[in-house]
Image (cartoon, rainbow, N blue to C red; front, side, top):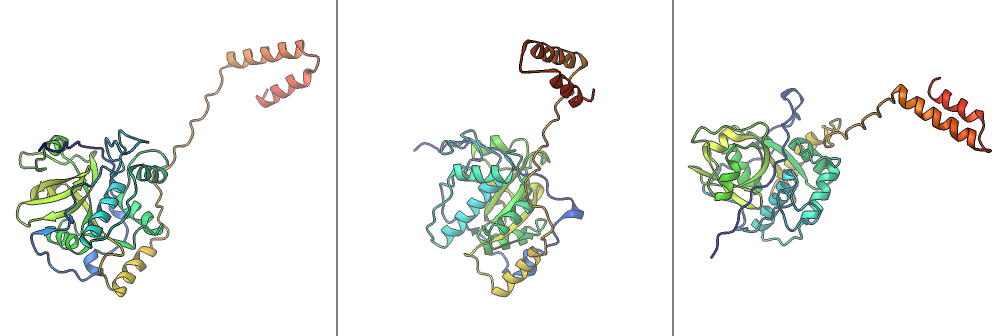
Length: 303
């Protein structure tokens, strides 16, 4: 049997909000009583065909077959797929074309990626998720506890320079050889496995990707738990989370601003003279035009 081809895709995570501007939400374990992680953890639901979800070369995406930086939207779908599989639910998923369209509508057509916190708030307000909360990404046990409880967590990372090659080869991402995360190489992935000793596994670019614990600690920049109807939270816990999210009402949740149109360059004096001369010729040659048109042109140009 031939080995499936693994093709690295695109990135699309913008840096998280500056510390002074981050959402004043508590960690998820402050809202929900979470049991300690029980290793090994596997909330992948046995899925083998995750789909690229337009986040790279994707033959199922007829609108953007070369892919987009929609890793945040791909991550939302992969997280939903894991939850559904763990509960033996059958769902109809968004197509790659639909995800691409939704992402570009959010991003004003710019394909400039997402700030994870902002897009989570947008999804919450659109009714696509019930709630969300940050996870203490500096605490691997807390991350794994949330992954176990919510059947996956959305993880914002900074990739190393060898990430594409290691992914294509099916080798674990690692920092053992001195690799360092690149702040300009932000990506969104979904954590679905951990053995608690050496290896974590993430969903990205349509496949499961292993990574060493050292890589996870070094390259993870943020982790988020997403609450959907499948998750077992009490009404009081959910209400507390939603109350704090609703208090974020003043935050802007749109994608990157639409660029202002570039102002038209001012015409040069020679251009204005040529334009006026042409108008003079038109007036002289027409029985229907008179000097009032010349006066109007001069007034419109401040003359």
